[in-house]
Image (cartoon, rainbow, N blue to C red):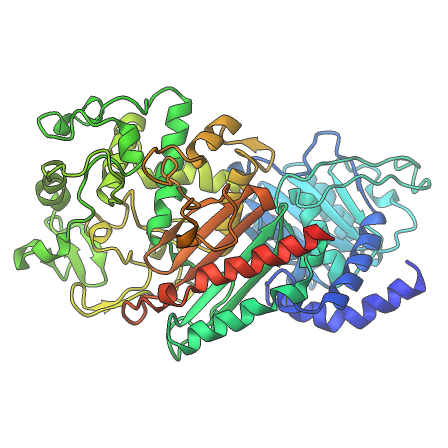
Length: 611
């Protein structure tokens, strides 16, 4: 590395360290254009001196994440926390450090502690490769596990690794910056392509090195995608305005441009006066459930020719055959043109004998802490009300939650699997989405989940990890229209897959034509796609924002959430908040917070494209 870049790097270390430890993908530093430009020069230099070896089996980039149980092991690596924070953006990776085992002559206990992991990412810097116990540990582990070596430093030879067939990502730099870059090569956020300039050992000769392609999101600064970070400063001001007006206690904003996460920042607090929001926090997505769970399941079954959009509801739901629903095609349901009434206030009809403060065989369905609904309440009460509700506006666009209750039943009838199980197995796990799913309290601690409403009229408790929507709550938290929870990073992964027209991480989830069909306008009477909401051609509505392109698709959620994809800009925009805390307020909408932030992002991208 030349002296000038070396000095750049050292001057940046303190600021970059703060950014990385905040796990905000450099976005805490995003509003310093020159510093980011300098950082990119340093990163480019690091990557030019990084090479991938031993990748004959195409192990890197990692694929089939649902089949991998991954551990990260530091063998004396200084910046392991930074490396682990980046690794965990792609998949759940459990950290181990040799420091806890170094009082033993060998690392046998560490090896034993890794027995339930099948993929081990080992970080080691140059001087540590002279320690026989580390090399013995690596060789022993490689006999039974899939091992990946992340090697950092000015290694003069690779003789210790001559007998190793495991992939090696060798960065000649050992710094916090390289610790943030090498994990991205391992998962496909950054491509490898360099060759060894000289012989390093008897095995690793000049010209050795493998080339990979980008398959997943990259985590970087706005300037890496041609966006001047100074042009994103207005996001800070708009979010501050929202919080000051009590439009929501907190929010997280994410921007991905051209497959690069260039902004991911948390604002405010979980509740007014509560702990600070973090970019890793988990939010109730509300109606975004419709396009992140139910619609993808519909898309998959349509591709498999198991579900026909122009077949009537009664062909799939036996109980619908004696009702007015029977003859309505699935396509009309997906377009919100089936004539269903918008909403049924199911919670208003709950009787004292329908619920209990304790769980039992008679009251098995958990609605919230201290609130259990009686067995078969959905089948006995809610489902008959929906099946027999009047069909009043068929052929017109009337947004209705009943549509996705119906679609959930249809896809479960066809697949034979519950919606939450199917989506986790077929989408979230293979994509590397760690937080996305229903019933988050079964998987995460309360402090990781953003509280929604302080429910004083139905469940009489602050809702933390229990779906805000009352109907979804009464069915146990898994519904077609609401119930999904996730972080901004997981949303970025899912919608980058859609932006890629169905591929991500080296795997194909949908055919390009399927994504194009469902996300394009498919209605003669509304802006809607199939399941997806879209840009409104009535420009006076400025929906979803005044600068959104006609290609924009996505959805909003009642709890104060939104996700929008704009293929014309290569953009994924995620906004998550809890505007219903402590109680429902419409200020987020009336102040245009989500739309105004979207406009700032669009204008910043457009300025970069105009250069």
